[in-house]
Amino acid sequence: MEKVEIMEDRIFLLKDFVSERQCEDLIRQSEDIGYEVGNFTDTEHVHVRHNVCALLEDETLAASFFDRAQPHLPPKMEERSLHRLYDGFRFYRYDKGQYFKPHRDGAKMLFRRPVQQSYLTFMIYLNAHFEGGETNFFATMLDARFGHVLLGVKPEPGTALIFKHDVWHEGAAVTSGRKYTLRTDVMYVDPPRR
Image (cartoon, rainbow, N blue to C red; front, side, top):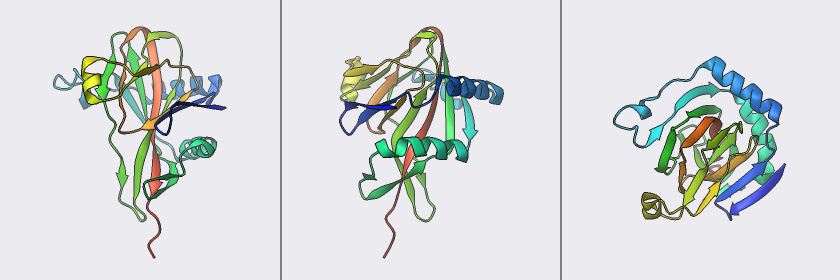
């Protein structure tokens, strides 16, 4: 596995994070779960997001991925310490013409003791047999609005893309084939109370 910094402290890759075989197994598992059109693709929201989703809760998978990724993840965000990967995974499938327009990801808050909050998106590209579908990043909301791409990441199977939630980005339209990704969040935990 190789860490590649794309934008220091904001965007990086973990190349060969998942094997080709594991990618294939994950795709099969996602199809067994079944993809559904979420409420984000209703007529009100289709201008922002057009894809289908399958949900998986798997603590073992989250722990396994975290063990591999932990040495490469920021140990602290604000006052919180690195804790785990969220075990609620979302598979996304994009067919020709499907996309996710420019947006920023929201933080996940878990009000347990101690409180957990996500700061980073953790996404794994699962296949390569498609065209388009790059993850494009933008410097500002205005740049996103006018399509001024700061940098683009071409999906490579098995590569994990990790970035701060507050970075403007898009999943460009797939122009042929079918794209699969797996997404979760990197959780940080409040310091212990004294």
